[in-house]
Image (cartoon, rainbow, N blue to C red):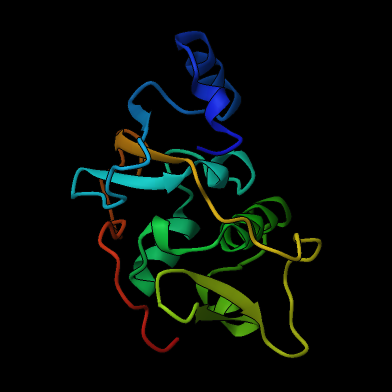
Length: 175
């Protein structure tokens, strides 16, 4: 297991993790064992723990992240940590500066690229474009995974649920 496993070693640590990363009570999570399958279901999903600790993922999910994953048909297990950083940074930039930034702007500046085996995808800046700077040059390879259940996609009481989070691994196709 990885370096963030220690954040969930005891009930006290779990409570502190929930507070530190603003995880509401109606969102449940548990650390997966190394031999468990990383596939979600219609009622659960799997996220790399580093996407929460370093990548800015919060629950319920930011609408831009949810839309990004839905549009590209990618499960959270299929995107790199820097991709989480880029999408969540664009969402925060749009919020802070009241800018109309969305999926089209991200895909104008970046292209989605898969590793040779198609198991992991990342955003690569197109020549002359970059929305977010200061990213680590090498993406981390996740090794701690959380299974998430409950109201993780949308805030409680949200009636219009335009996008569902993909939970099966797939190919994003051309973008």
